Image (tube, rainbow, N blue to C red; front, side, top):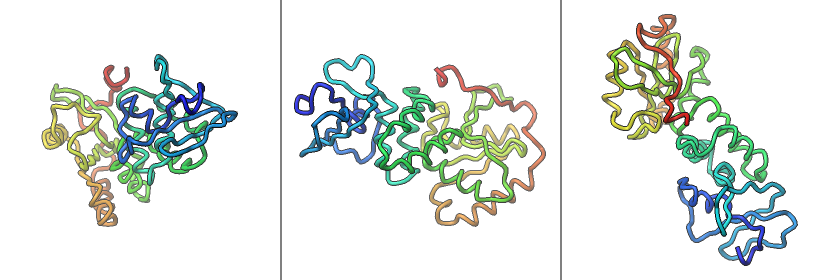
Length: 256
């Protein structure tokens, strides 16, 4: 910062470290900075400099300044290999309530052009509720079908068994079908004491049809998985949610 000037601000993946946003493949020996367009500072050695007319700094960052969490995540996501990786990165601060979807959209508008298309596609997924790379695969699969309706992503349900609320990865409401993307051991939007099998058993016992999907199978047997999902939908469409199953808002500890 002494080298780059008094207006320099820690940026992108380097700022993500400060905000505790995980960026896979990040090189901790590289320092990323953003400076005003009028600055003479340029990238050199281990310092990567970005110039911008809009620099939004985090509050209370002290002597060393950092961009806000939304800017840090969006600029870091500009370097993602594809939209799946970008969604995985951007979903982390969303799940921790460090940022809102509107914050990410605003940061995207002011971020550099490189990688903009990937982040734009990732934001499209996030704005409809997708929160993981596996769910990106599932959404793309569903939208390639002429049979399946739109899916509600990461929807909270109250079940008639009186237990805790459950957030399902995907819900086809008119057929009472739950899509569960089982590519990860821990569901970030579910309660942490429920493992996948217990969670799916609860859903099934309440009358919901659970359709488990894995990212690997969606990639290597895409057509087969799609046909299975379509047949499941055609067998259940029109029945709606089972008695006692209700759509609810996200709990306060999520929405806060």
